[in-house]
Image (cartoon, rainbow, N blue to C red; front, side):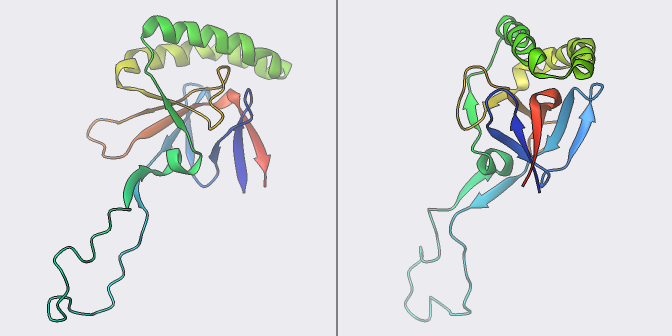
Length: 168
């Protein structure tokens, strides 16, 4: 199994259990999330509660909740949204922090393509949700989520160069 850690914070953000598609010259990974029900399991044992004097509410479990699988699995923490100015400031700081951690070849590609990825994201800002890893580090990578037209489940965007592959 492969786990992808944030290169800046060390938080686990993704694993190979969630397939990704590279977009924007490999700068971003697009991952499909799913809403899932987490909690107690309803087991039908074949009994007829009404014939046995069971109540109307029997079988209803308030402990079951709907969560997004990626957010729940990696304990991502939602952050307040960025406006355009805040996002550009974040990207500039992110470039400054991440570039020295990349090898020379990756540094050149990162610098060459990060502007295209930023231009891809800017028009989507109002529709994006922002997440960081469990540690909630200030200098961490941001995971972005949005709903494609008509989609029920969210799509997540990861900065590919900010992820470190770890074999488990």
